[in-house]
Amino acid sequence: MLKKKYNKKLIKNIFTVMFGLVLLFWLFQIDWNNLSSRTNSGLFFGVLAGALFIISMQLKNKDE
Image 1: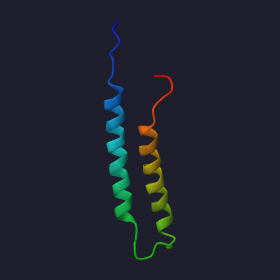
Image 2 (image 1 turned 120 degrees about the vertical axis):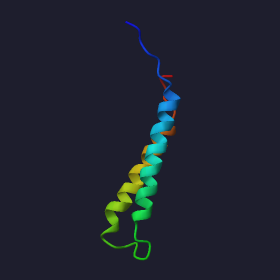
Image 3 (image 1 turned 135 degrees about the horizontal axis):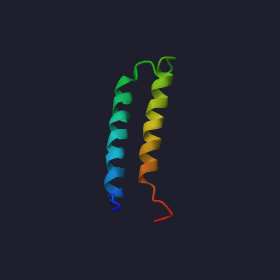
Image 4 (image 1 turned 60 degrees about the vertical axis):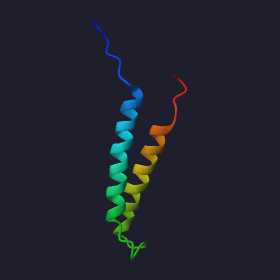
């Protein structure tokens, strides 16, 4: 059986763009006039999660 080689850098970049779009979506959902509002708490977690995923995709693996 032939193993297909996948371009890991391309796949990482695709996921980074996807999480970047999620981050932008959550940034536009935040009520900037009232940042301490209870409704913004979930939105802040969405922004934080998107940012952490983007950072983790940019880190290099030690196994390479």
